[in-house]
Image (cartoon, rainbow, N blue to C red; front, side):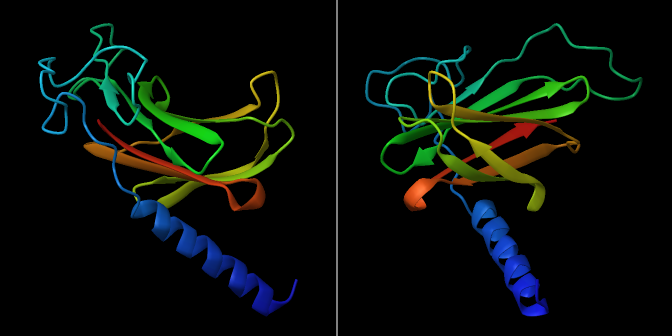
Length: 176
C-alpha cells in the first residue's frame, strides 16, 4: 500500500468519525414532540420503542451490581431507533454491564449474505470498526461491544455502510 493510499484511508476514517459525531439524537418520548392526548410519563420501561419508532427508552432497575465505595451505581438502559435507507432498519441499545458500557447495534435487512462495514464511536473517538455479513433467518447483523465508559454522559454513535451505498446510523447517550 502506498503512502498516499494510507493517507487517503486515514482521512476517510476521520471524516466518517466526524460524521458520526454530528449525527442527530433520537427524539425523546413523553416530551414536547408527542402527539396530543399522550399523557404518559416522560420515560417508558420496556424494550419496544413503540409504534412509529424513533424513541428512546429508559429502564432503571434497583438490582445494581456491586459498586465500589465512594462511587455512584451505574444503571439504566437507553434504546434509540436508527435512521436507515430503504430496505433496512436499525436500533442501538446502551446499558451498564459489570465490565463497562455495553453497546449493541442491530440492523435488519431483507437479504442474507450482504456485507456491512460498521464504525462505533464513543465520545468522538472510534471505539470499534469492522465488517459483518447478514445471515440467519432474519437476514440481520448484531454488533455487541463492552466499552470503557466515562463518569457522566456517554454518547455513542454508530454508522454502517451496506450494499449499493445503503447506510444506517443511530446515536444515543447514557448517563453514568
